[in-house]
Every structure is written in C-alpha cells, then in structure tokens.
View 1: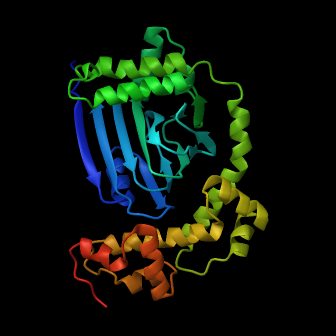
View 2: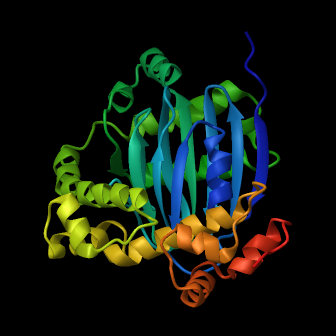
View 3: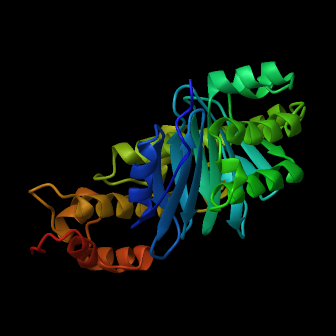
Length: 322
C-alpha cells in the first residue's frame, strides 16, 4: 500500500490562541499564556504524511505553554532559532538539545523570548518497528514514560538541516514520505542512545518546583474571577512564600502574582475574541476575569498585547458596545 503524498502547508496566525487552535487540530492540547509584551505574531508550517508530521512554529513573544501530546504519537523537538534557551518540563533546552516526549504526556514549556521550534511527531508503532527492522537501539526512546532532554549538538544540527531541506521546493527528502520519515528517525535513534545516566537525577531536581507551579496554576485557573492572594496560593500548594516565589521565577520567570495578572489578561483577551452573539464588552470581560479596575485593565492589556481591548473587539468585526 502506497503512503499518501507529502503535504506541506503554511498558515499565519493572529496570536498564540489561534496558533494553539491550529496545532490542536493535529491532536495536541495547547494552553498558552503570553508572558512578555508585544503583538504575538505567529506562524506554523506543517509537512505531513504518515507516519511523520513535522511542525514548525514561530512565535514573536515570550510565553508559557501547558500542553499534552497526542495518544500514539512520539514527539521530538529542537529549537531552530531563538536567543534564549527554553525550559521544558523543568529542564533547560538550548540549541544543542533535543527533547523527547512520550505519547499522551502533559508537559510545561516556557519560551522566554521569540523563538522558532520544530516538533517531529511520529506514529509510535511505526517508530518502534523502524528501530527493530534497522537494528538501531531506539526502543528506549519509544518506551520512555516521562519527558527527557538530551544534549547532543550534532543531532540537533542534523535535525535542523533536515527540517530546512523539507521546506525547500527542491528537497529530495520530500519526494517519498517513507524515506523522508526514515531520514529523521535514523538521526534520532542513532544519536540519542544510550539514555544519559544523569537524566533521571536532573529531572528529579526540577520536579518539585515544577509540581508546585502546576498546582498553583490549577488553582489560579479555577479562581480567575475571584480575589487571589499570595498567602492563599501558598496554602493551597502547601509551601512557604519564598519557596513558591522561587519556583515561579525558576519555572516561569515571573512572580506568582504577576503570573496571575497575565493569566487574567489572557483570559480577557479570549473572551473579547469570542464570536458568540452575547459578546462581552471590555469592562464585562475584565470583571469576569477578576480585573476590577477598567482604566488599569486597558493600560495593562495594551502594554502586554500591543493593542487595546477595543482593538481586539474591532478585529472580530463585531461592533463595540459600552
């Protein structure tokens, strides 16, 4: 049976929310929070044919992404362009690193600046069969139960070269989908084995702070429209103020209360971009998200997103009200 032809497409996205929606169509759950100021101009390029999808995301601002990978898909990732390393599941990822994420796995990612990254999503069964048939020791990658980050600059560079070739019009790697997938897989399984012995220790070192932040984030999401105090966050997480402050600075790059504020602003933006008939006014969206000072809301919103609430409403084509 012949594989379907290699499909390549490119889409520009208005912001991080639209980017998340596009990627969600491929089975990923994405919940992005903009952390740095500016208009979040984004783009996505996809080269896809079973058993591999190569997804290239470009983002124009710092953000956090609370994501989960699709069932049955093994995901690898490299940074293509970006001035600062990302933090992936509490681990540092720079240009010389490759990340590996098992199927159906939740993971927190923080990109501290504008970045272009590539995600390689393999059918897990195909990847395992490829390793077995080629006699390559890649089964350990497919059997991992938690995210890992490998430091291997040579492998990361070879993956970047294959990604670049994929999106060139004359790319030989794009002629036949199966050899195209095999080219990526061979580089990964040959270069990321054996599993580094210090990875479990490194991962455990970051696990507590990542867990504290995730518990705090879950509390914030459940109480966005209510008063949130730092003492209440600490009590919910079960740690002291300094521990929670340090965890947020390490994992997100913001204080806990600054995170609450940008999360509320992001939720308000999603409300303002909604196209339901009962479209909220800027003041109503702010109140619903716990932002009770309209004047400050407009200024904070403009400083973070590079546009005012009225601009966001206007972009939907729905007349502003009140």
